[in-house]
Length: 182
Image 1 (spheres, one colour):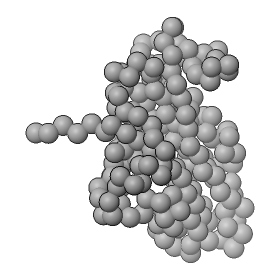
Image 2 (cartoon, helix red, strand yellow; image 1 turned 90 degrees about the vertical axis):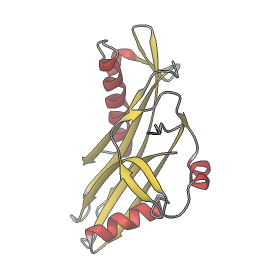
Image 3 (cartoon, one colour; image 1 turned 180 degrees about the vertical axis):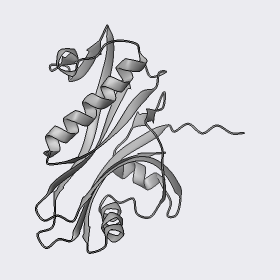
């Protein structure tokens, strides 16, 4: 059996609105430029040696109809003026031979920044737990270097978040954020 471990990943996001919830989701996928692929949701491991690449580069490498493995966060509402957010957080250890974590966060009432920060902290916390070290997002954050420091280990993080406000006329509004593996 051939093992497939992704070598690259890109982040994307989108918003969709429609009277049908499924069509709203499809519209969000189109906005994120990933509706042309057969998406398979996977769990939260950032593979060893995987590189984060720009979305435009990753999209050039995919073909229409291709199966694409991804981690997707999704939030939807048909409540007028309701704030929603979907976030993907990534925590990558500086040692490229080790795996990292991705987190999905779906929220109501949180700003894009709050949801994104939470997703990043969540991914970093999961990675710290696997490393067997205690983690406190506030104490372990090195603002100057924009990375977490956990007992000498350095953890790089990033996130992508899409927020949206529920359509004023009650159409379904869907926000998605995705990490797509190549």
